[in-house]
Amino acid sequence: MGINCFLEQLQNIVNVWGSHLEHMGGVRMLFGLNIPESLLPYPIVILQGALNKMEAHYHAQGLHDGVKLLEGTEVELMLYTSDEEAINETLINLGNNKLREVLIEGLKDYQKSQMGNGYLVDKGLFKLSKPRIEELEK
Image 1 (tube, rainbow, N blue to C red):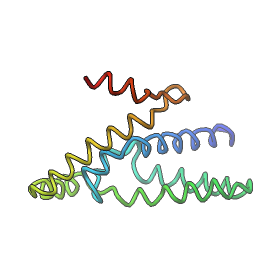
Image 2 (cartoon, rainbow, N blue to C red):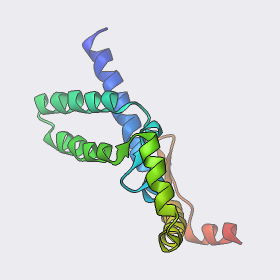
Image 3 (cartoon, one colour):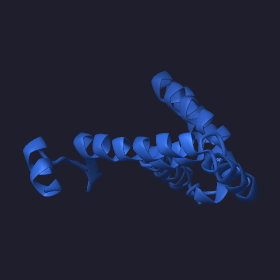
């Protein structure tokens, strides 16, 4: 496999990771600091390896903003833990009525903010206008 093909595969993994992060807000709210590892698009070792290799590539190219951006996303990997531990912790948290009410309200607010911000579809932003959102909610 050539270096360009290898870099392309790494970049695709990093792009999938970025897309994953973009759409995990509700899941992060629900699981907090213990998100099941199986919800990752790839095992942690693959993601960590791809991020590290792309950071090294960006650094060699003088793309220091790209390095900082990728380093910033690596922190998110610390939120993931074994599926069993994450589920057990979530079940304990959901047993707390006050916390459950806050989570439910937070999830509803998250959906509304996401809908207002729009979604990336085929590399373009799909965004409904506020009047259209209000019309559809009726």
